[in-house]
Length: 189
Image (cartoon, rainbow, N blue to C red; front, side, top):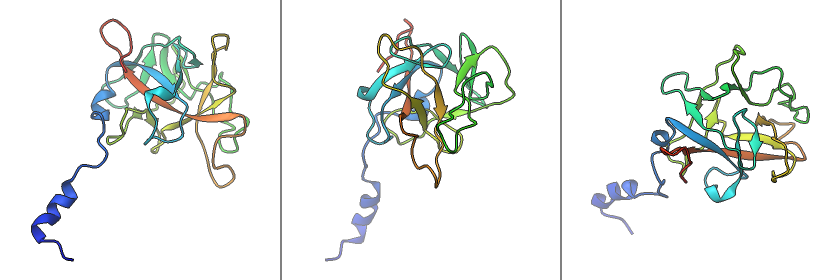
């Protein structure tokens, strides 16, 4: 069966799965960074939340910091503690990771570590997941999901390769979700 040529343009313009909003427009200004226990940017939702990042850039259950994204290049992130970066040599390294063993945990501090990292999201995703580097939207956490008694936990960039396809045993791969802050300082999901 042949389709009439007039129908072909319609086939290429039919909507696919609809994103809830323009993710790049959502990732602006100030917001909280919620941590989602998910390995799939296409199926992850805010219901996968296991915690959020605090003012120092570490995972906590609910001590969520307000982050500010620079509106122009290099699109850095900061908190009241200072600029956030994976470049702080005082932070622990991910010694369990084959490819990330020399990588330092993310931190926010009022110091210049000589690195500038830009953060972005990808249009077409259902939510504004925070990515960095070369289309890297996943991060590496060690330990168990935080509870009220858990001390703040470090977070590293996720590295993989032929010797290690996923996070090391005892770690979990997570996503960072940008949740814009409304005028009262509370995140909106």
